[in-house]
Length: 603
Image 1 (cartoon, helix red, strand yellow):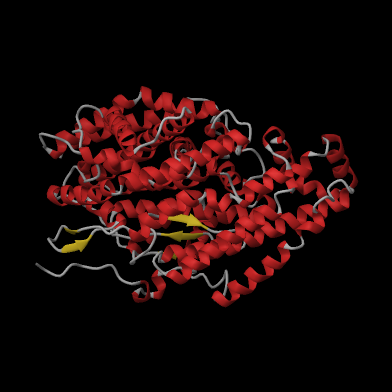
Image 2 (image 1 turned 120 degrees about the horizontal axis):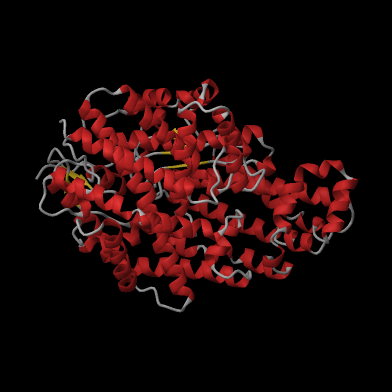
């Protein structure tokens, strides 16, 4: 047996393939200085407690102290989590991350009095402060967001208790992360060249794209054999995390965990229900596409490990990271020269941690704070999927860049509800670019197939996740034990509902719930689907050159949290309280499915 290929250690990577975190802190010693300074600053919290009723000037001072602490906490936390994620097996950065998490919890406890004390003031008193001191005006919307939550904020003592318990309440999610990213050991499998390779979460995605069915099957069964082995542990961590969400909602006087989660961004629950309804009405399109996939693969039975391989054989296009950077710039040209320059800066200034190494957090993300660069984590493998991942995460990072450059710190971030819109708009623009520039029918068919797969993964799959997430929260609220058997049985049924009768009921897929980190994020995943749908509408306006479309879109990128997310999107040209934008996205999917079906008849 040939020697297995091993992932490189962090120390073996090229510097240019790693992110540069020195602009945050020059080194860990500088982190310690900032950490200690903030620890001291937290001791001043008592000087501001009890002063909100002492006049407009005292009110302003308390707000400025609160925001200054939050700003420092975010910087410290981001540095520690990026360091930890680049090698989750590094005990030095495990400790650094733990310290930052503890400090974040301590700061939350030290400032937990602010909102209850604020809500002890009447609206009349607060409005009088704004009239008295014009320097408060910038904080009007910030204060309004908090006073809107009067019914759900507890007493100062209760808020302090919950803040002090935040680290404990987060333990289930932290345990999942360590187990999933650092401690799980996966088997050796064969790659496309017949080499023995160490399976990992990042490599799994690449192998699922293999045109060798035996490679896909082996990787699929090997990965899920590990998750099945730990299914009871994962059921425990997930179930405990769901209990945390339901507990928090109950003590804060919400009717459900979903209402609590969505209320933070003032999103009506009907938006969630509308998504499940409209996607459910259009599952026949997914079934049709799955049936076509079965036909093109020329298989008697279609399995879940057949869902990501190119249906037209070996990919006629494949991009190295350098090639992907060039393509990304060309694809994003409709967003204007200024946008292009920001992307170039990201590549030149090492915002991106590119390649996979031992212990590195799986997947991809964009992260940062107001006073850092909007960093990107990748686990790069040469493929069209990773080109799309790069463009997707760049959408997040440029969104963050615009927001932080335009808005003051108090509004220098954007809601989760809006987060996926900018990233998916980038994906749609890339698809349009590739379809316009590629003339080879095989390449065009491949791009269309990729788009259809992306739509499947972003709207259909994430809505499936959203339906599962809502189910487990409602079941736990009813007192139903979330055992591994119960979770697996329901997940298997849900998978069959979404993919239809053309797909075999692979027993392994019943354990997929155990490896999805987003189930720990508290009603997060539905926003991928709503975001994709909204992005479809926005990118269509930009591509067609509609009047003010680009200007409105850039306004969206710069808005931050200066208004409710629904209102930000209305200004950008999409009303997400209605079902039309989701139905329009389904029409695009159907049109491209039609185009794909017609094109493959000519090959």
